[in-house]
Image 1 (cartoon, one colour):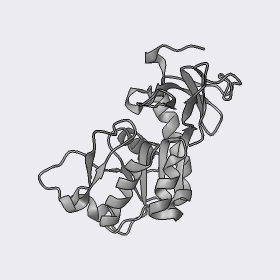
Image 2 (spheres, rainbow, N blue to C red):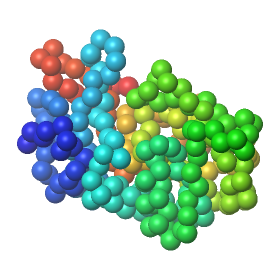
Image 3 (cartoon, helix red, strand yellow):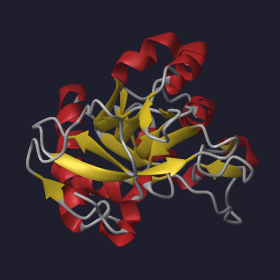
Image 4 (cartoon, rainbow, N blue to C red):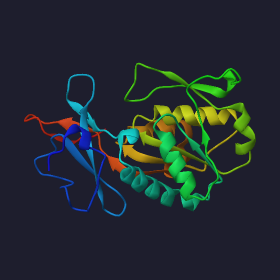
Length: 233
């Protein structure tokens, strides 16, 4: 089922709509499965370099509300086992999902980290951050000092849209550590490949088992005939 560029992330398809492991590989679409088997169609994006590697992309703020709700439902279901008291949202694309998860957990609000420095912020509560989609554009991640009373001594859950290389999550963990906060868990809209596991293990090996995703997608490698297959990260 071919999709136009604007049609990705718009529909939650019934289970089995797409072949999740086609023998001849993928072309421009990767079907990611929710825990209940329903599928979300993701576009295959070729990574910078020699064109041999790609990822399945998800841009939450371009997704339909139905897709956003389905992701938030699955993320909240994973989070409930940890009985979180506060949800922290990671900018930018993690913020709508953090709102959705916090609402489903019955919270009155969530706490958003920021990448725009306000004049009352402190550099001591900041950390450099980059991502697979913008590796050359490192930003600083900030925790508003006014939010500390909401977080201290509480069971904190981190919410973001995707984890791939793990660099963004490392920045979050390092930033929170500066405030003596260790999250009880982190939930993502998508787990992208497995490279992130090695990065997190180097910082906090025990935390890897507390990372969950609504959907998962592999990194992809191009075959000689131009099709895409799951790569060994």
